[in-house]
Image (cartoon, rainbow, N blue to C red):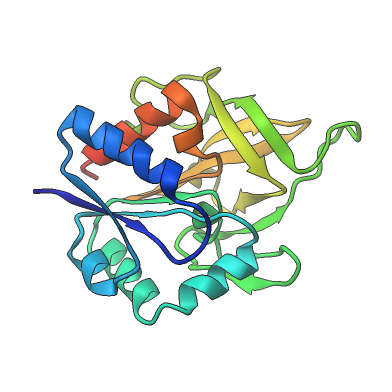
Length: 212
């Protein structure tokens, strides 16, 4: 039985994400979803999902508070297991984050997390609500998702990738704002797929069936 670990490191309420992943696992016969902070369970999982709400520094610190958890995630990714980061879980893939204070990320996708600066000063930050995705590079996790489909965002910082090939999708907010990053067996969404209705559920289902 395929096991997907939804990592719980006290970074926010995981209820919505858990329900969305469980629903799509049932509908696609994709095995079991487990919410866990146990490194041993993460190490045994076939897929790993790392959510995150709040600020980059606090999420990074919270993850380090769980002994062995980051190491279990990192070893799984190095072994080729499919990985999805959500919101701050996606931002932590970067080399560093610049929210409040410079904070080291995982360094799995080179780049930095910087404040959103819309060219139109009337647009508010945080970037909050629905926005249209623009697909930059095709990916198996986007099957059935197209440019113009909506996703739900709540964030003030976004991932500025060093290599344009790693930005898989963006949205326009008086300037490009990174929406999805990825390489190899790693993918990350700035938006919340569990709150993005049909688009988000499709991405979750595709991830659960993805074999990079």
